Image (cartoon, rainbow, N blue to C red; front, side, top):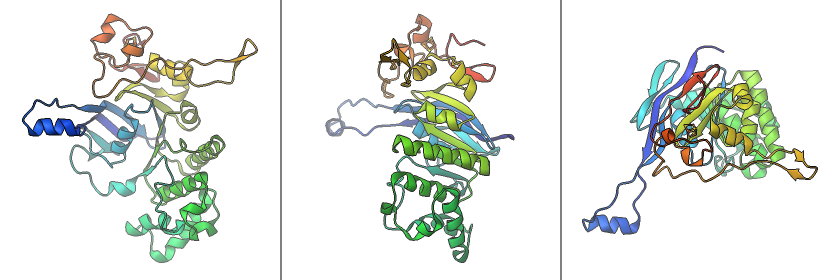
Length: 332
Ligand code: SF4
């Protein structure tokens, strides 16, 4: 792997939720209406090296999809900078159009992301033709090549999305993204909507494509098992912040943050104890609302080893070996 390729520096994203009808009426009548802010992403810094796959893991609502959209250039951050190959490309405000070819995204729902009125071949060829990456005459060969690479018959180019299964549609979405020859592929829960057996096929496809193409990837998932198969490093996100990041083998073998440990413990395991029970420990409590995140360490209301200090002081990410954890009790 070579030098840092994608770098997010102190990236934050805040949203102001729409006021309810009652609140809008109260505001129009000059009443006192509380302004609320969702802190979706809160000062996140991370890097991805060329050829590396970084997994971004956390519960629904932790901000990982928002962070992925910022990394992909489809959403501007409220604060912070995204650098691509050392060059600032995304900051607060409009983002440059050239990113549409350099970073591509594979979304969770392959049916919603494919235009049902277009043939598969046109869906895959549309981007490369529009961005001058291939001529109209050469587009059919490009489509055939990418359908083959993702395990589909090139003759499928004339079919429509509804003629495919969910797994096949996700293969088409991957072909469409890679036909743009992106520098980085952002995958946002790409197997979450698929049956388990199909998930395994798509995970194997990502592994194969990584080997063949040396893909650089940001792989977003709530599923630690899927991320373990695909990624070199893993970042754990909780309520807008990275709480642990490091080499995959270190994160899975020696998690340093109580939230990472809780996530790993909450994965159902096929381990029979006492001859009868399948044992796993679901994570306790609910993810707090990003409208009013807990002070100090955001995880303290759910943390089994929280101390007084945790309720008032935000823990910094502390590095130790190949991983860093944001916990007052993490080793340094
Ligand atoms: Fe738990 Fe405190 Fe560490 Fe947060 S800082 S994870 S509350 S021990």
